[in-house]
Image (cartoon, rainbow, N blue to C red; front, top):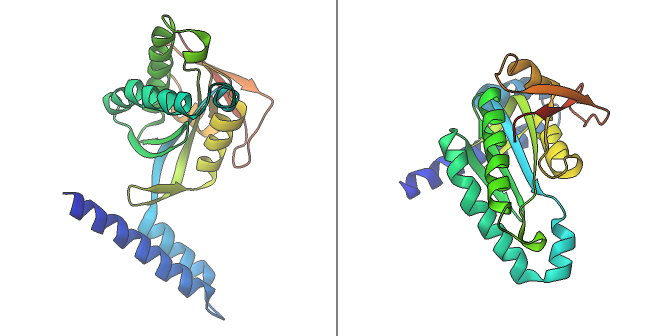
Length: 209
C-alpha cells in the first residue's frame, strides 16, 4: 500500500509537470492546457487551515523543545477528531495543518469539535502549555494533486483566514463556505471586515464552545 500511494502521488505530479512544460512552449494554447489541467485535477473540496495563536512568541520564550511538545500534543488530540469527521490531513507544517473535507458543513462541524477538544485540554494546563487553535475554512473547486497538495483561490483564502486573521478559538470562513453550509444546526455567521484574496466576503462562525 505505501508503494502504491507513492506511485499514485508521483504520477499526478509527473502529469502536472508535463502539462506545465507544454504550457510554457512558444505558441502554446494556454487556455486549452488549462482546461486539461482542470479536467484532470479539478475537484470540489472544503479546505481547512489551522494555526496556534501566540505560538511564535512561546517558542521564543520557552525554546525548541517546548515547540516540539506543543506540536506533538496538537497532533495527538486533533488528528483523531479529523478522522472522525472524515477529513484528510494533507500537510503538517510547523504549528499548521491543512485538511480537506468533501462537505463544507462537515468541515465546520470538525472545526467546532476541535475547538471543544482544545478547550477541554486547556482546562488542566498552564498558560504556557495551552493549545489555542485558530481555524480558517474555504470551499470550492481546487486542483488536488495526489494526497499531498491542493491549489486554488479558496485554498489561499482559507490559509489567510486560519494563519493570519483568526484568533484563538475562532473559526473563520469564506462566503463560499457560508453558502454551502447554510442551515447547519447550531451555528451562525457574523461578517468580518477582513476579506482575504480569493473570497468575496468572510465570516466568523458562532458555535457552542
